[in-house]
Amino acid sequence: MNPFDALNRSHAWGPGSFDMAEPLIQAAGIRPGMRVLEVGGGSGRIAVTLAKHWQVDVVTLEPWTNGIEIQTLAEAEGVGNRVLPLRIKAQALPMPDNSFDAVISIGSFEMIGDERPQALQELIRVARPGASIGIAEPMCQPVMPDDLVALDEEHKLKFRECFRTLDWNRELFATHGLPPVQSYHFAEAYQWWLAYGKQMEGRISAGEQEFIRRDQGRWISLGLVVGRKAD
Ligand SMILES: C[S@@+](CC[C@H](N)C(=O)[O-])C[C@H]1O[C@@H](n2cnc3c(N)ncnc32)[C@H](O)[C@@H]1O
Image (cartoon, rainbow, N blue to C red; front, side):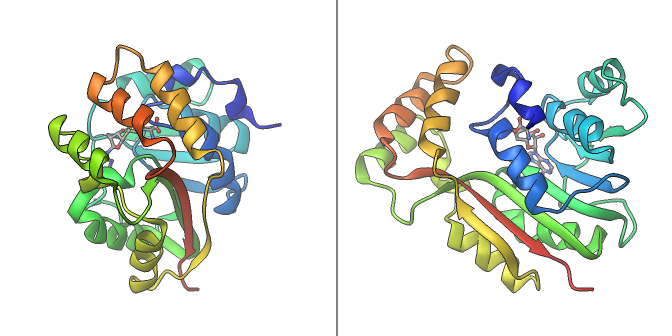
């Protein structure tokens, strides 16, 4: 059973977030008793579901909010003592080296933009030797078609600025001493993008909606990359 299937998709803050969660958790080898760092807590549903169903402790980085919504949800779901939201960015973590048994990020690492190398270095530093570090998020094909470039610029979507290819992310992991142990595009990626567009009607811009519709699976995708820190 996948406990993320039971979640209301309108609580996801990105395309495919709740669909990518279980595959990423499996790929990262998360087991009961672990301490997990999550980058990008959002509504807190991923951290709370992870803590509740995998019996792990989760520290979740949520720099966009004060974390109260996450804390309240965790308490309501009986895992208030297992989920800790922190208003902290991944680029500069106050935790000591080797603090976490696994690190995951869903639909969030791409938001760090040009500071991704710095953030990855920090995530590796706070991960224990042998820990998995994994991302699942919007990724793209190498060349954005011209009509989509025009839309991205006209609506200031910054998709071209944020999204990278699977190979780019694999290379980033590898050059930081984290050879990918799993990496792939989700076959359902464009369906999940379309579903996200529908769920977010009125909550994301008309420009973003138009981009998703016009893409037709040509450029936007969703991908997963997991690497393991050396023992
Ligand atoms: C699109 S939301 C995804 C949230 C959630 N993971 C989900 O999929 O529903 C992006 C998340 O990235 C987080 N974020 C943005 N910049 C960050 C940074 N520098 N370090 C850590 N988290 C960051 C935001 O706080 C936000 O929660």
